Length: 282
Image 1: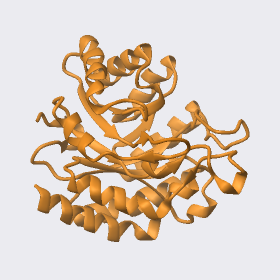
Image 2: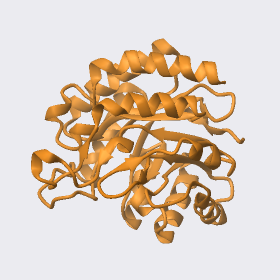
Image 3: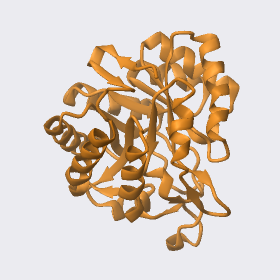
Image 4: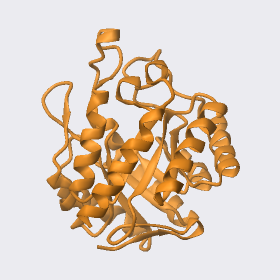
């Protein structure tokens, strides 16, 4: 299986490489919180010898309610991410939702992420692939909840048709299983790796209960926080090359997707366990 490289950060993902940790906040709330979470996760991963990428969204466009918190937006959000990158000296991962966002996002983010709901939108795939290739980053594509793992080959083909040397990383984040539920087929991780790309597992969004938060009578997405470590450990045991996690100092007060978010003070224990599982599997 090919290995993807972030040369400017000396980070590699894929066969024979350390477990890459893409972790941070679900959505940017303010700069101080982003720095607090990023600083703690950087310290933990440095102690464990794990490559680290700070993740946060500047906009959560696919909200259940029009009144849900979405984030600071493109301009202010990218400025915030650029400050985190500069202050903490860490690579950045964030997502885009519109064609004209791909270029500005790739100028700041080392990992440009295409959300699962949008991964079959050809124009968005092409825009992201071109912008990411030009900037020398990774194109991190989340597999849609309705898509079979092997059908991700079409995403790879589209991307490589416009950017032949693009480093693509696919992400497993669960599949729709009836109404308001997601499950993760761990066999899908190997299926996507057989397409010739590294694969991460998004343990945070895999425990979502879409549109089923009892606190808001379905006005927002619910989640099963206790399931995040289970999905994370199972995904790494199944051979995932990277792990995607979201933390917050007080998840119940997070402005977005709190039910699926882990407490920051639990990061050290979980990441220590994931490193050990990854080493045992490899």
